[in-house]
Length: 289
Image (tube, helix red, strand yellow):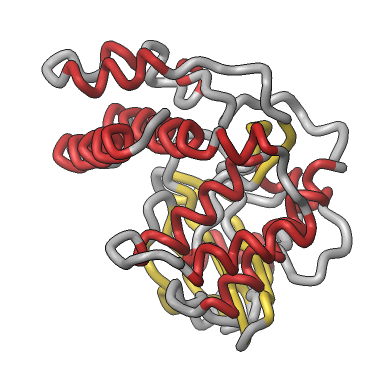
């Protein structure tokens, strides 16, 4: 690791692990920076282009630190490593309605800013075209021939042209937000940012903040607070709100195809892939979509 950190002039730095995520591993460097080791296929160039294009926000986003020779990433092991400045804060509680409202408000602000970004290269991520999710999975319906129910769900998903499309975060969850008290200090992990249905970000955020409430009677104060905060910045249309169940299935199907690509790349086990498939079926069976 000293060799890769030397590219940023940080050889002999104090390094300690932050944790292992689904798609990357992170380390604190001198408690001032965060080093991310990206384990998915592809490079973080698009992610870094988005981060560098974002203007002033009421919270921070990871700021890619340029190496001494002008790059924002370096080869490291089986992946690549990038460095950003550490953002203060902790992950919010999924049961705290006030924090949830602040997170919804921050996501709405972010989506307004993302909608204004121009000049980024084309990328298809969250538009319902499952053939474009992962380069190792060009035909998703063939993934689970021994599990026809999963194939049937995948086959029913098609892009649609009646919902607004813009650049979205693509993976907004409590684990990708930092807060201090009731103030959002940072939004992290733009790895899956790309063009997609505008309402997908709200749906993904609601999934993260309201799943603990599914077993409780209504009202659901946390998800209601998250939605209220988001709508302060970006009220959605009636059509987008009605499409939420469908978007939830699309998100789970997109996640499943992504994990299938990870499996084919040797990054996850077949049992993990089956678990994602079971979750997809549970979501699809429980919704009218």
